[in-house]
Length: 146
Image (tube, helix red, strand yellow):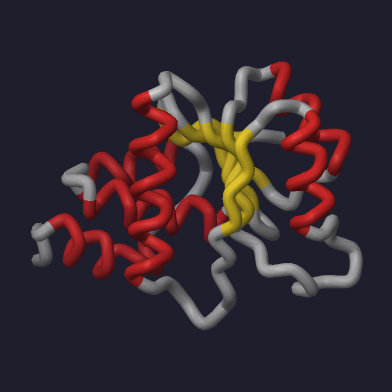
């Protein structure tokens, strides 16, 4: 259920409280919730995931992405999370409804951190995600706009 993008991050559709234990068993050290609460009636609310993460000694970060799109503070928050996890040799699980917004946010953060658009597209593509909808933003953040 968790899909690896690179050595430091997995993405996933909405997770449940039970899946927090699976994340812990996989070595996940930080869970990032990219889904706003109340998006659908059947989703597990962020506070419930946060409590389960804390119980499992997993860090929890909320960076909700609505359908309105991405903002600079969201990208910067993801960069900070990636840098913190990399410094601790940890692993992130980022989730949203389908994993797509989490992948897009990771893509934008990695671009701003200096990764090439081609490498971002390759890694996301290997995981089954298409970054084409945010390609222009990736290129702009990486300084490689065509």
